[in-house]
Length: 402
Image: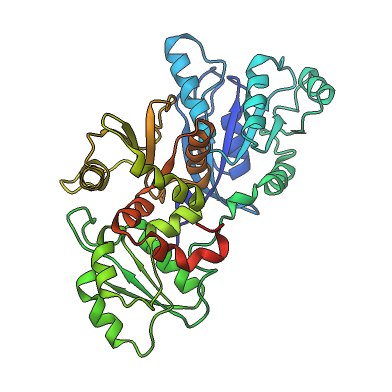
């Protein structure tokens, strides 16, 4: 059974005070008992992620969060983790009850949603109970809301339809390669095998690009860089494009004739998940770095660190060879993107295959707000290899001139 990767699912964050029925609402929307429900306030502690196929919405990631009014030192930490969810959220649902006195907790959430331009809606849960305090406040302040009963199912179908209407445009992001290839085109994928490659399988970006090629009725050939010349020679016609792992740019560059278009998996994902022009603009900062400058290397997932780890070993080595500067590095992984980034002179992000576009755009927008250059692994490696212009060529139609 084909499973949509978490990074390609609509992320729906469920927020609200304790015991407003957030978990019950998730169970009602999904039609399954996937979230723990209790009359005891604060049952949900850390954010809980659940991938679901919800008709008629499609593949979703529901995020059940701790109450935003959680108390005590531990409660404060839970609230921080809850607010961190906002970096991934495509649609926000703020759950209240008819008796809820809406105050600073909900008002701050609305403020953040609006600042981040996140679509949101209030859900007045437990509408089978008495009380109109919440509805009166929401109507007075012209805030969008629906009345729902997770207990009886009233309003649940309407909520699903509302979520579909709120889905932001970026949830259907730029295709991987579907807009640069046509039916019957031949695409060659160069997938090197090194110590960092998972045993017995390809990595997610390679698999997703391959799937997009097949979905567009084109033909995919997969090879290592050591067999690339044999692969090209065996083809009756030259391929529409060659897509390579960035770590073998120089090998592929030396093998591939100039008349065959070339790009990389990282470049594909830079456009698909982030802002390709921002990355291209940001990479120019490499030549302005000075001794002692701090660089943030931001990975979007956690993995076992290998001796040839790209973020911790290869990139620092390549930058040292290029700049001859004493640069200092901080590496973060998963959701640990720093709150304070002002000390960094450059941010280098991974391709972001394991997270959704909202998370990557959060990083780009934060860097832009502080006027800090940001780029990604593949764009950096292309720049250092002297082939940046070449690997951008297949996408020039959708780029401001770079």
